[in-house]
Length: 172
Image (cartoon, rainbow, N blue to C red; front, side):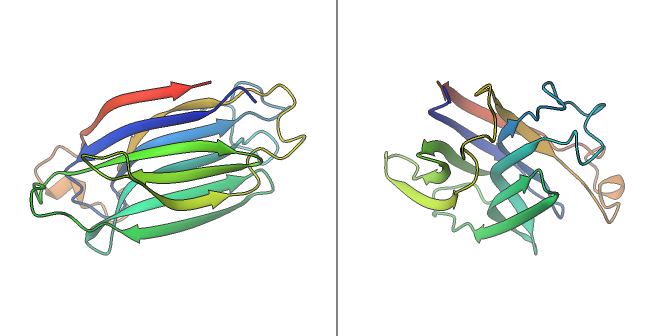
């Protein structure tokens, strides 16, 4: 696996349930070496993936990690974010890092103004032998507003979530 780590600072006005943005790590499958939104709708073709970022849940921004394995199971974890007094309460900004560690993918929150990292999650299965014989993965950023309650139509935002990404770094 050539991947070593990825880091980004993500920020937005997280206002609606499930507003989210962050880092995304996708492992193609043998049956679908170039997954995208058009060719990944079956269990056999759907890739394994991990996303970490900020997600609004129960009215507050949380650090969120979701891991989806090919066997069609996923798990989701949330860690409520504590904002320091200097942060704009309307715009929450977090620096996240994904790091390869043996067969695991570790997710860290990097504390603003320092290089201190807090381990948020360790997903043991990501780099297991045979998971990806080519050693290839897609790494990038994402932003989404699922809006299950159709709130975006009435909030004056034109239904759009604007997510900012700074200092994206991907090292292989």
